[in-house]
Image 1 (cartoon, one colour):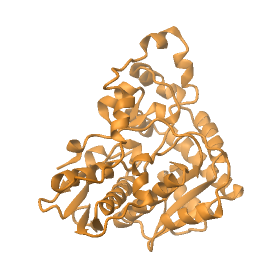
Image 2 (cartoon, rainbow, N blue to C red):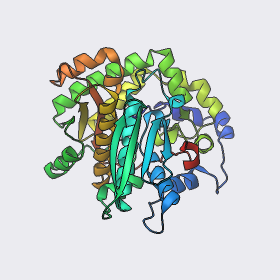
Image 3 (tube, rainbow, N blue to C red):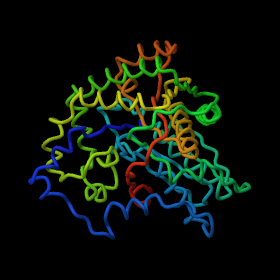
Length: 369
């Protein structure tokens, strides 16, 4: 799914020489990354919004959900009567190498749906979501109700996939229970792995997946196409994986393009992910009841509630989806989890740690149809 890839642990070597230093980008203060990120993730206003303005704000909240490679593979249609919003896939932004069956794409629509429903409730609207298999879209109908500002709604502008290191400390049983409740539904099962043996077993599959993906030229090219090596590029596109969000420095795009394949190695990535799993409090695995688009949307909704609940508790999370992205690894990974015959949908590490630079989003006008 929503997918993470760090540029490379050795990237800082590129910015220590005079060539790299002379090419570092400088951004105007008003249009620079920090200013745009602040506007993107501003808190949600709760007053003086009606009609089309409210519909646009609900869409903005929906776009703050995560997406694979931050492609933002969604479109939104506002009904003229203001009583429903449809969330449709943007197939021009799909990732065929990492997500050939569009699994992550429909999980992403579910994440956006959950944000929209949480925001609607805060504005006094009850959102009921239904997946339309004919149109491959989610239709959210809106009916007046008592406004409720939940901790999950408040967490929307603070949530992020935090790809840095965590502090390695365990969570309390109360916190784990809240995460379990938020991330489960009648058709989605959530496994919380906090025992070190189970985490190491999952790590082994993650590293196998890393190795397979980085040996795939199509995967590597697709990943590089969505990386924004500096703030200026991130601001220009408002999408993709901003390198600084993974703890890497801003470098000129031409250096990143030239050095990317040389620096991105299976060993480097595996060493990094091993450290990050071992300093996490646990790993969450989401499993839909059935492997179809409707259930993938529901998995996305469950994950987003999990992520928002985690954010409300000061807990970070990031994806480790390699075992579910590499098709050959799914059956043995499922069997290792006691899920033979089922398809694990998402793998997520979680724990406490510092915030990282935020990813950006396209403006509402760019996603409305």
